[in-house]
Length: 470
Ligand code: PLP
Image (cartoon, rainbow, N blue to C red; front, side, top):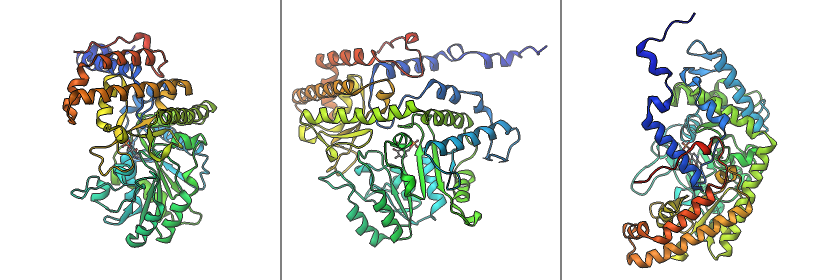
């Protein structure tokens, strides 16, 4: 017979809706928002029910510093099984031979994965080169401004960026090669947050080799496309590949670091040892085992034929969206896309990315302002970034993305009228007019009706109620 629950413990068995109605309500409202909006943020996705179950499991209770078979805590028999399974699946998804590649699945996020990878590869104040943030690079690739070192990757290491051409929107590899001659980096980074084109890995490898530098690819954005064979694999060229697991890869929020193994190498100085030690104990403490379980589930799903179909559809949808926007006469950075995102330049229309982001938010379209080629700063960007993976997970096809393009076009037309009406260039004057606009309200209803006609992965929409806005 089991013992009765002590009175001071009863709330430990109370469901969230009773234990904390405030948090429960906010979660329900957020779920409705995800359902009722067109989610076009290129770094987001809708993960599966199974991933969310694993992520919300009792594994959150366990400490397991160290690696499978070598932990600093007891009770890790099942956690060891889990982490080993997760590693195996992660290598399989990317078709990697475990004799040539290994993986650390403990990074809490993409940013910490990158910092741990840098810690493994180079020494403090060594030199790295990554794509500049206004050119589409990520903060963690060495971002700094004239006035300030912004990212820890520029505070603890020295950084010199490379850029995209102001007209072409393509990485200027010639300029990168010239600057690398002068800067002599120890680490070269490819991969980005807002770059719609494929990477010339062979060229990057050549430049890295000239300076005896490591080549790291941060494939966070397009990892799902690589897994499905819909994007050239960086593993053919790089020493280290980092990724997040929650973007096109559609898993939980986390990171991974893949490292190359070399035959006959001294284990003490191998990338394997250096990466594993950099993650723990240098940069992190105990792994989040609930997240590792969720990554394992996501890796199983990413190895399925359905995932390949999804990845193909992501690319087809991006092409359909790009074609329709270009058909309306709009300009896209680099003229199109090879992956899951487009960069939409609104400077020719005389609009800013901030204004369009705000009006889109009012009409239930979620995207983000982004610098586009020709912009000098990321603070007042001239365009927006649009990604197709989240809506593809909801079942959107090419015709649906044509409709998305129509809705985006309507948003721009309304915004141009609002800008005239506001009679000022200031965002706050523009917003004041937009919030009162009947046309905005009408478009919002249309978008909501369209969005809610699609299913939502991972949760039951029939149980949701629409939040009352104040
Ligand atoms: N790397 C790239 C290329 C990214 O785009 C991002 C985030 O958007 C990250 C790393 C950071 O990931 P996280 O937000 O999980 O720290």
